[in-house]
Length: 214
Ligand code: DX5
Ligand code: ZN
Image 1 (cartoon, helix red, strand yellow):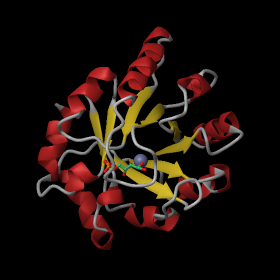
Image 2: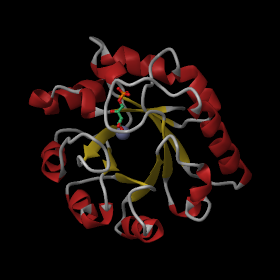
Image 3: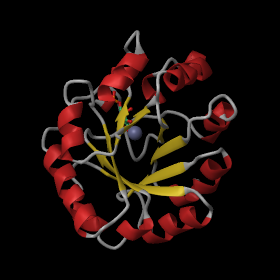
């Protein structure tokens, strides 16, 4: 069954705990937390203190998507803050293998994210070490963008690799996902759908989550 990870990027930050409870009650599987540093992406969101302030307010696992340069500098802070999954961009660090294995050895599930223009070939030597691969279906930085159609083929190719190698790695897709395009994305091979604006801009987030899983 496909899992849905609402992104709090589109939530009302002034009522963050309530906004998290709203999607938890609506059937969310994970809480997607978008961290942006204004360098790796042209936007700034929040850091470890905001994440740790949500601990104890929800039972949802924290799926932390780091869109920051040199994530190895801050990874301990995000572990400390209560992350369950930490996803780093392959484009953001030179020593990706070291970082992924460091995260794993701390008992946290490591993920790797690929920008739309980044080929799958970079995954070859790390696939066995990661819990999930995040395919960005928009250029990272902002919520509410349009899904890039060419990413369907990329998801399919990754799914083929996963099946051919008997890998247990999960495929997460992030950006521009809504009720209309989710069937095609799931069919292509997505295991986890991230959705921000589609869920938070709705008056009935639970309904959207249910439809996304269909
Ligand atoms: C984009 C973020 C996404 C974003 C998704 O940089 O990584 O998680 O919040 O938002 P929507 O669903 O609105 O595209
Ligand atoms: Zn994200």
